[in-house]
Image 1 (tube, one colour):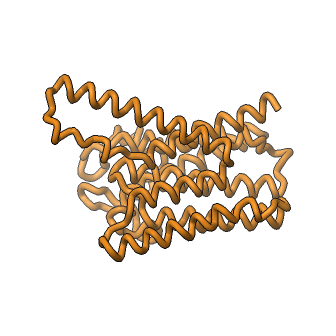
Image 2 (cartoon, rainbow, N blue to C red):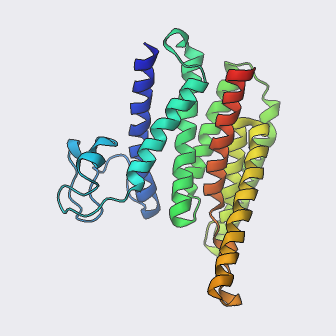
Length: 271
């Protein structure tokens, strides 16, 4: 029976992954993500049911639009598969099973799924546009507040542990509002900090410390490789501004998920 449950969770994960690809494409363009029917970004033809089956539609259509025959970016297939595998792994490591479907377990699983939505969409948009969308940050904040309320009421956790994070939320939002009014633009740094606060609320301080360390190492390696590449290509000094374009939100997202899986696996197999 658990196998059927995990197959269902994997399928649900791929459906979420399909939504992630839609959100990553539409949110930066300020397009509706809930009511507007899915369409081909090349020919704008509305997609039918057979065009929207996660993973299988891409395979059966050979990676091309049914209507204009334009190639579909492989990222759609990759995100759907990664999302399905991630949902499956998290459910397994959280000991979600037929015999353990209690209200608290389902609630924790639901919050984790919604949190993974936040990380996936935030990281995907940042990778594509180097931008932390304000709407995604607000979604993460509201989700964090709901999770804190759940922890304090159901899990009897202490609210004092989270007060400092809520204060940081308020301070960063005030700074971001001031920056927006003064310079007519959102601050990327503020978005990264808001993302980090949401992550620490959901995954804890230990995971967040390792996330920051892994992110720093990944960014340093990336910058080093890019510098070596520039030296080989003899890029002029004034063109060497890659450090200002690093997708910190993307690296944070990937590092956070990797460390979260590691900690869940540690508790499942060794504690």
